[in-house]
Length: 446
Image 1 (tube, rainbow, N blue to C red):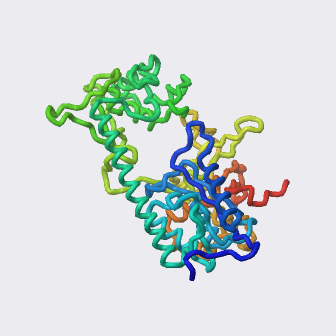
Image 2: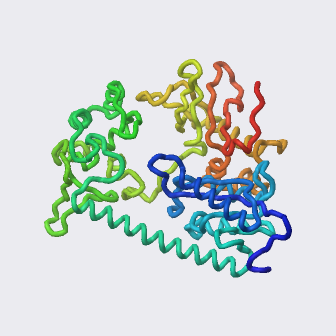
Image 3: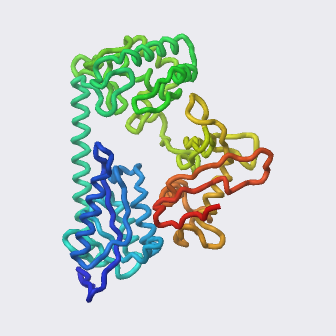
């Protein structure tokens, strides 16, 4: 097979356009991915192809293995299926550069397997058409992968060194301002700093952190990103070493290499180190600021993650007022009331974070999701490959892979409130919000 496939006559090869950025613009206008799709359109016109479907991952990192890319996953699903919903057959993919598609060996293997799952496919970039089946095409892809890995490692080391140097100089953390300080991250916030100081003293005196979170909510206090205070966020705020002036990096308190004393930051402090340590002593180690987050040292060998299959995908459909739904995320919770429903998904009404009026059986939700993905008559909104259905229903597919399938198909699933006295499971309470809704036929009006 030739290294560069050729088109004949006026035939146009239908391809999918993929675009990805690691970060969005400050205006959050997705300009980067829009420009990539625009370049892809120009590229395919020059090489006898036409874009029939677009797939986008805006502000999605491709270097870290714990980052989801729903657009990429959906592209692979459609390549395996051979077509993109109603857009028709797919015979290739176009991207502005290989590293937009993959930066890890696992993703390179997944992409090549999906692209070459049928004969006659092409890969298009600004250099032209590439034959993914030939030795030359594979070598070019592997070279791009090697370059992307080296670039990612160099960039990661550079960023880590930059953060470490800032920390050793006692400079404040980058990112959103911490609760308790003004935008300069140095001067105390006149209201928030008093709340933090009072919360630390109250906690040392024995007050439950949930009560403190409730008091903050009653005062109308919100976090620096606009969220309502919860016991967990309050715990993180009052156990963060910054409250007493200590500087930490990647879950470790930094110390002067010569004197051995903790690095003291260049910002105003809220409490003394003794009061901070006293507050930390009231919590178990796993709740402390120093042992939370992806960069913090783990207390056990376990990795954090969702416990229940639909966690993070469900939204409350309870009505707050006329025409306004709650839309808060439903969390999973154990239940000992029923052997049929050992866990439920619940809208948390604590601390004003949700209406608290909507709950649904966990197994019911997951059964409804399976019916939506794999309808008995085969006439569903989406058509997943038969291999996926068999692996899912046979139990061969693992928990994480199932969540990726759900994420590739649904934006979320809205849970409608149940009716009192109704004993039978009502699958219609689970209302899907499909991804790529412009390619999924709308529900008929009732």
